[in-house]
Length: 563
Image (cartoon, rainbow, N blue to C red):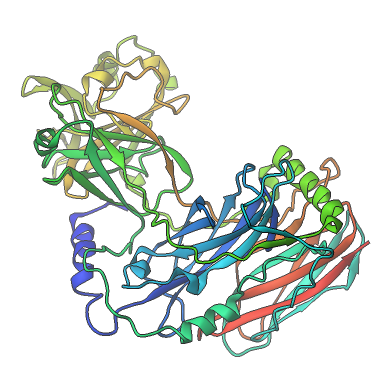
């Protein structure tokens, strides 16, 4: 999808148009997880519901939710979840350095958090973490008791029904059936996990969340300067490394952010008078090396961009202490073993990649690809353009050599426009075209040329050319002093942990043995899933949790004995 100026204007006008008036949207986010008790180093599998607090129904407005995990001392881990129609999924890896204790999981959208007096505890959950490698504990956060308390089960809600065979053999397979007995469509997550007797903190489930929504007081007001993240995350950056006069000198210059790839994570915006740049993205997935650059910066004013954190570091409220007993030691040893084996034997065959909302930057129908392995290799890039690639030429503009891309005229001939093309190397902009003109052609696998005009924010280019190397990591490119490469946390990839690839060569001590965050059942419909049992026995919980289309809570559970 091309990014046109209209998108920018639409987003900029949202706070004063679509969101004005007495019935302003009040978004709240709830996260269900695969279980409640983890060991440090575990993966927390998450399913997100973003709802309109007034109706309780899913909100299709915001496209990203922010997740924070807090100890009483502060924020310890974060994640971003892409939302599509109010639903999303992700995975958060717990650091193996976390001390033992209870942690508060908070989730929100920037639109929801813009409400005056916003209380993130409406959708908060409490999870328990035990560090099996260290004796470190949250100060005052662990109580040692003679025996483990018996948890109070959450009562069923809604019309989901779960059926199992009751028992199954270890290292085998079993079938689980979920049926929707109601009259409305049901969306839910499904988790099958080992119940080893270690109780969680009794954190709220989705019935508690829907009940809390009905108790929300009337809104007192909203911040007027918050731009809703309708298309995706809005990334904010600020010019640093210079004084106030230097920042003013960057006003109206263009800032670029990008990550290696096909160009799908490329954004550009103008810098304002205060040295700020706001990038309207359509969500960036995965952890990336993000390239930050300011175009045509004064060589005597060495400055660069810093990304601002989108996380609000909210108040987690009072977190109850964790209760542990010496009787939990054998179960914790099994959890420790399972976590280490999953880390060491992690394989794509254990996961199922779920669909994401794609936003194509370039029109593939407009692309001409030159695979350089099909041509005589020249030692100089410019000779390649002259001999083989008729759509590219080098011209001198304002004393600098630039690349230009041809277009078709109405009578079918080639015509070169005077404006500069956007030149990319592995999807990252190369502002100084001399660097590409002198780049080693032997490092390049193919060249993609797009001859149409493309708009990024308020910036347009007359054609795009992307030089894709064999390694895909911009090898041997020398960057300007103002370029910064930073670690960027993108949206977690939505995954289901169905473990279809578990084989006999896998030492199978999984604690969560089946997880899907985004299941849907029509009224009267049922779903049967195949679950591979681990190499050990015990009781396993089967939990479905979600909402129907009216915003009513769904919660069902049963047990499965593995022998």
